[in-house]
Image 1 (cartoon, rainbow, N blue to C red):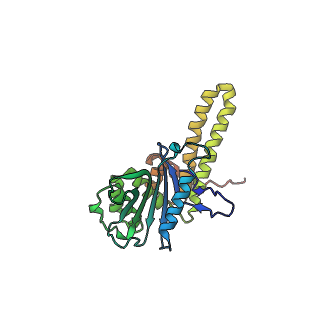
Image 2 (cartoon, helix red, strand yellow; image 1 turned 60 degrees about the vertical axis):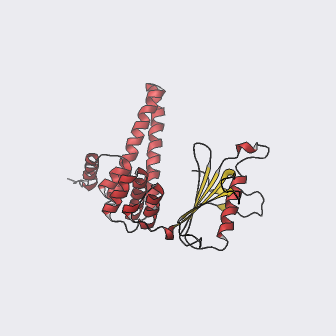
Image 3 (tube, rainbow, N blue to C red; image 1 turned 90 degrees about the horizontal axis):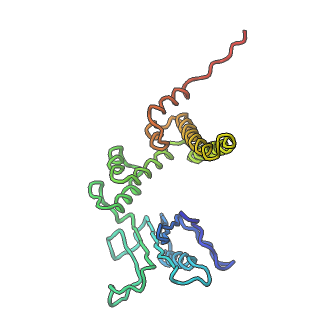
Amino acid sequence: ILNPEIPKNKKKEKLSILDIKAEDILGDIFYIEMQAYSEKDFAKRTLFYWSKLFSSTIEKGEEYEKIPKVYSFNFVNFNFLENTDHYHSVFKLKEISNPEIQLTDALEIHIIELRKFRSNLSGLNNTLEEWLYTIKQISTLEEEQMKSLQKKSPKIKKAINAVKFVSLDENSREYYEYHLKAELDYNSGINGAFRSGKEEGIKEGIEKGIAKGETLAKEKTAISMLKKKLDIKLIQEITGISIKQLKELQKKVNTKPKKKVNL
């Protein structure tokens, strides 16, 4: 995942910010946008964003052969193309009289029209359809439907769990607090390892610190979730802590400290 901001070439130039900008292991660039409402000149805007991103892939003086492929994926919640019922349209640079001839494969723009996608759960034929179904139905999916989707794809399972987690939390910002605490605990464990490493050996200290930091981070994250009464299975999936260990942590959460009696 890269910085979604496209650099400006001039001071007066309009700043462009994408929803998601990413690079794969081959160096190709992908940008993804979700568009909820119809917008005037949407096609020109899409091409403008693509061209800015394409032109920013190499520095002045670099060879053109270093320019990667740039893919644009636009998920729109409105009917964009009037002359087709297909929900997924792909645009490339091709010769008009002979579409088999392609000028270059460096340009590819995908328009995915969510309103035209009407498949049911049993009729999903590929990964894209599974994702589109999840995106459209996530707020109304029943438990059995979720389980069916999760079996189809580990990535969809991860996405559904993330949505469930945020929706169960009273304040979604607490999600970031959990992970911030986890990161602090993790770093604290590593720092402690460096200190003890002077006596035990740096390598051994680091290994112990990393292990201790990870364990402590997971436990503190789990305790925070348990206090918020989140589902124990969901906590197990997020933290990786076993149900047995989570039940032990639950006992600690439920155990109220005894008040001291002054004699």
